[in-house]
Length: 230
Figure 1 (cartoon, one colour):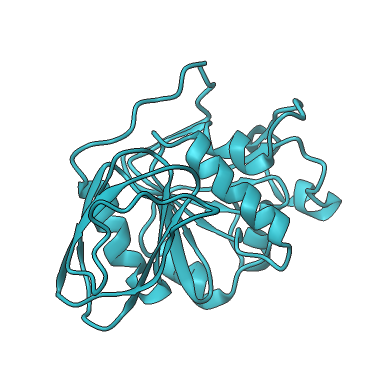
Figure 2 (cartoon, helix red, strand yellow; figure 1 turned 90 degrees about the vertical axis):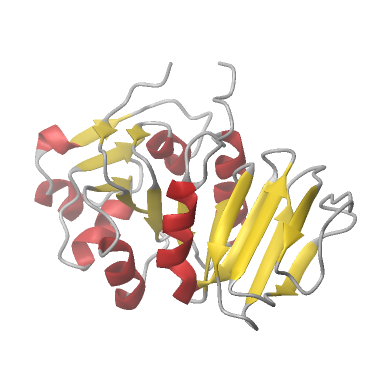
């Protein structure tokens, strides 16, 4: 069982090392209580005047200045090299929702690795905020308040099927795979959207302006995926 480092009954803000614009940081902090960081994400938080309550990772990217600015008891080293710092942090936080900033970066490999972590820990509800969009792994069912005309993309990380209400192009009965049929650049046609999927393998991508609404919908979703076997 993972060692829990941060426990909260409120959403937790998690900083990654890719950098984050002030507007994104403010939007995330407005929705969260405690603040944590994945390794070098602490430097990103500190650059915005925020001292994380916990820094989690293998500590190979946290700067010397960053380490000096954080109380030693707030630094939690996990030395194994099998997983990323985002993985280490996500599995170490117990909260109704984790909202990440600093995971949309210039390096595509880092961004793809973050999506893999979302699927690996499908039982942890996590929403990643970027300058243009926000992304999460779909729970079994979600009901969204949306604006007709806004984009909504569904990207499969593996074989997955589902159904939808309120989308211009319904997904009912479509077998989606990464190398086959996808669901990107769909459009909302109603102020209420319902999506259901049959496997923890679908990314939901919405405009960043929908961050707060997506956070509320994720926390209100009645069902969640089981924790993976360890």
